Image 1 (cartoon, rainbow, N blue to C red):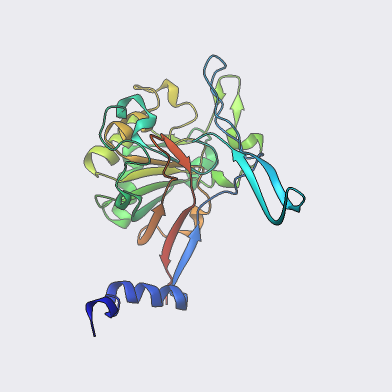
Image 2 (cartoon, rainbow, N blue to C red):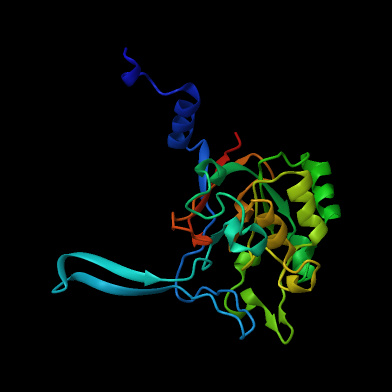
Length: 267
């Protein structure tokens, strides 16, 4: 048999068989992108992120008798979306800092899911601190370098105004403290950090030092962000593989995307 017709490697072949048999389950971690999905709201003196909008071009009619299609518009950071290092001032001068220049292997990696649902249920402003992370590691092992780390809060079950949770002093939602995200970035060398909320930072993250520490430390170190994730309850604490590939937008700072995870079924 020639090299061109050789059988797939055992690793890829086993993966294909496991997917076909259902031994590996594919989990969709993405919200449906529609005009009603909330976007982050900044103070009025700043520019605002655009919601998703879609318009019909044709629908098997006089505008195009055999096809249907749409135009759509939205911000880079609308819906379930990806943050590149170029999104934040701390990452603006890094090499390969936009969605089109990040090496594609960075989009795929093992994932650790830190369950913060009990704390978030009791406190909308629940904080992911070093103590919470280390307590999780005592049970599941130290977070491996190169991992995606997701903060599970079940915030994705909220709808409408409850999702942004705006009050007179701004939004209230869970997120990491400066020391918490620095532990993940500097000591655990994570690939990226993801949340179920509208941003990787807590709703009141502006009041930390530095403001919005997840954005500042993640992107300053060339790491990646995911937000508005869904279905994290379907992932185990460790052992799954996350795939998060943004659109290849020239010099893009972020992108809506379809995030999926590969989960080994228990036997």
